[in-house]
Length: 297
Image (cartoon, rainbow, N blue to C red):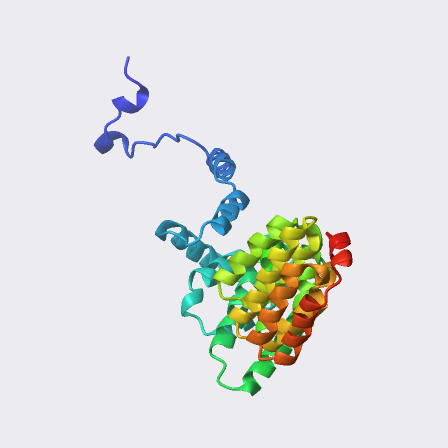
């Protein structure tokens, strides 16, 4: 009843032959099946997509990304994810150099993250700029970086980030160009909401641009008046008094016949230290044509 192998004696019959559970090619097939199942259960692209959406990385995710980079030192996803994780500890100019090439990547995820990191690099350099010469060099690099971007519309968050930098670096034309696609597509309410958010971040020129765009998109006269005043008040809050009066006279449009707006213009001119312009608007109030005002209403 016992198998032949069990009847052998090592000291009499020699070495007992080993039985083979599987052959080499069968083992290879098993390994391939396991790897295939692992790939199907944990698809790499889906996992990397989750890592892009996860900020900050937890310890397990960070360890995975670090191992990914060790396995492939040219892995762009791993480099960018690690850069984002350590961005607060990086020198701004070094960060700018590190992500520059990835801002033109063919992968939209890499391109988006690289541009977000580029904005942070520019903001860090602007914050630490010790002299006008450094700011001028930074302006030139910002213009160069934006000119190098493909001619595709930027996502709203990136457009706002670059535009904010442009306004802070005294490049209003560039800021306007970046915002133009955004201003054309959003509703007046959405633009006003963006204005309030920008003002909360103390980005007064950007906030003013959103408020005044909301004024232009308004169909109700009272709403247009309110947004017009919000836009100019934002400039005053930022200390841009001369710009506020100049912008008001350019942007006033049909509100020039609005009594409440003309009164506001008197106060604005005085706040900007322009008594002559305040007197001009005060005369409009005194000598206004009541019939024309009635028609305008």
